Amino acid sequence: MRQNEPPRFDELLAAARRSAVHLEMRDGYAVQDEADDYRRWRETGERDVDPASPYWAPWVERVRAATARGVVMRRVRIVSEPVSEYIRYEHAGTVVNVHAGEEVRWLPRDQAVGLLLPAVDGWLFDDEQLLLNHFDGDGRWRDRPMELRTEPVLVREYADAVEAVWDRAVPHDQYEIR
Image 1 (cartoon, helix red, strand yellow):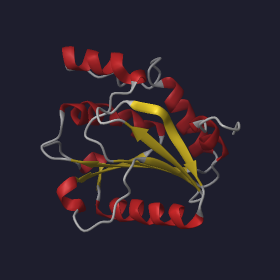
Image 2 (spheres, helix red, strand yellow):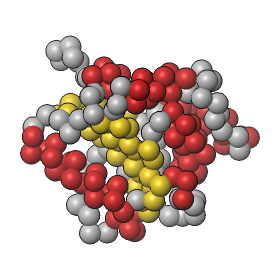
Image 3 (cartoon, rainbow, N blue to C red):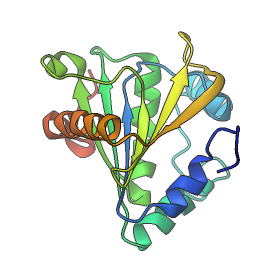
Image 4 (cartoon, helix red, strand yellow):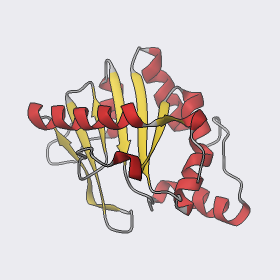
C-alpha cells in the first residue's frame, strides 16, 4: 500500500490467503461504476448477468483467481423488507457473484435484532485486515472511501459481528425478495 493513499481493494484481495468476507448493510448505493447498469435495469427490468460482459468480467476474474488459490469468498447483506428498488437490482445480479465463486447470504433487517453490528460496510481479509467502506447518506463514495484497519481487537469484533450475521442469514438461492 502506498503511503497516504487509500488501500487498493484488488491488492488486498490478491494478497488474501484464506478468506475475503464482505458485509453490506445499506438499502441503496450510488457508486459510479454501476450507474449505467442500474439505469438500464430501471428502464428495461433486465440486468446484465453475463459473467463475460465488460461490466462483470473484471470482478469474475478476481473472484476466480482468489478462489482458485483457496480463498473462501463470502458476502452477506442486511436488507430492509420490503426491499428497496436498489436491492431488487442487486439481487437480480447476484447470480453472477455466485457463478464466480462467492457464497452470498441475505438477512432481513428485522432478523438482525439483538446483533451488535458495525457502523459501516467492510471487507475482512484473512481475519487480519479490515477495509472499511465509507459512503455518504445517498450511498455515494465519500472523499476517502476506504480505510484500512488492522488493530486486532477491532478486526476480531468486526469478524465476530459478520459471523453472527452469516449464521442467521439465508443463502442466496433460498432468499425470496419481498
